[in-house]
Image (cartoon, rainbow over all chains, first blue to last red; front, side, top):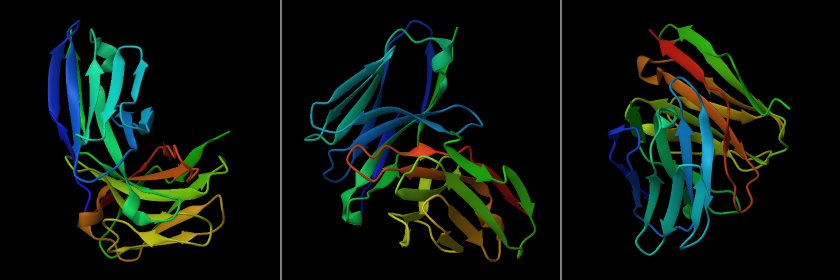
Length: 115
Length: 113
């Protein structure tokens, strides 16, 4: 059974600082997704990582994937208040078979950026 | 384009009542999913439909049934609601091809008393 672990689960940081959120998963996979959720809202796709060594960047966020280590990171550079949200990683479950895969989500990291 | 829509947005049920949550998409996606989100638990897959005419159980299917009515619509039914089903329910869709990013609806907040 695929397990996805994120850490930390809670992160309080100051504006202007850098930090990294980690996503570890338990079985072989080369497809990993990062989502953002604002309080009371739905999930918004941030990054799709489809191969070992994939790196994607959007503004102050950068995501990477190391399939050998079964690890993805979401790096935050010079945080601003607008980045406050919950961030989820999700990994596909290839055991589902066919061409349509299920995603297993981590529990999420609640990020609070303080002035 | 509306994307993924869900109805209702909010619902309060008494224990033992039944209801159906509706999900519709205009993205021409093949795959549709139902998740529940509980505090500290992330999202857990209830059921999914890889394509029209097929449905499969996810991680937490007990107490739920689904119907893939056509390519656009995927409904989730609670036959006899229980307080443990109090949650936020999200519908999601994807193409089902490589890079099958999922797109989420706005959610339904359900309370069972």
